[in-house]
Amino acid sequence: MRSSSEIIGARRRGGQHRPRLCLKGEMGMKRADKFLVSAALIVGALVSVLAPGASAQTGSISGVILDLNAKPWAGLTVQAVSDQGVKQEAKTENDGRYNIRSLRPGVYDVTVISFPPPNDKQPPYQMAKVRVQGGEDAKADANFKEILAKQGAAVQEQAKKRDEEQQKFQGMKAHSSTRQVRPRQTWPRLPRISATRKNRK
Image (tube, rainbow, N blue to C red; front, top):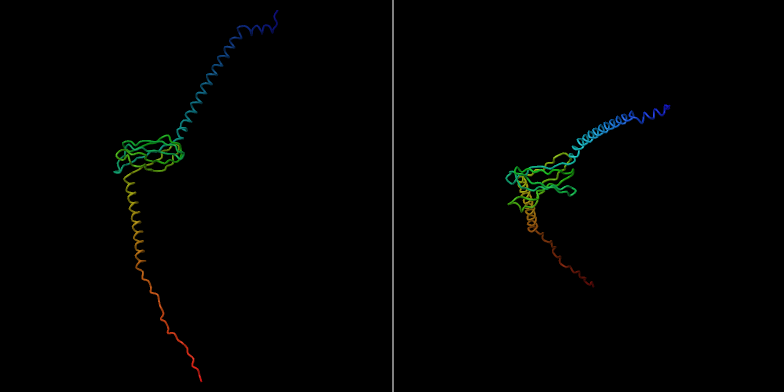
């Protein structure tokens, strides 16, 4: 006659134990599926949160450039140089607009480095110094008609000051040359008096 322990052992080794293993396997697969779904949701949430932050780390510089007749100037090459020496360029479109994208935050020198013909021999012109911040667009515009007028006025003002200084110098020189020299005063000579002694007898 089998003991109770042998019966329990036989039951465990029989067919009643296998369904329990199958149930545990199904539960494990379900748990694994739930874990994978949760992980995918978490990763998706992180991507959606971090993606705007990553794009907000860079900024841009844009503007409009007008020619000597105050009309849109196409074909200019505009260069932005950061305080770290990083350079990026863009060309102006037919409407005179340009846009330099994907710039790290910092201070940039904005310069027109090349002009289209017939002005291709012109030297570079520094437009502005701007600060770029993450997720923002810094503006740098230029109107060469106004720039030329200001430069002409500055040149005229300098020429005027130079003429005034020259006239002042000439006036001082003329005054010094026509200054009257006071004559040296001379005193008349007094007659020389000689004293004689008479011998008294």
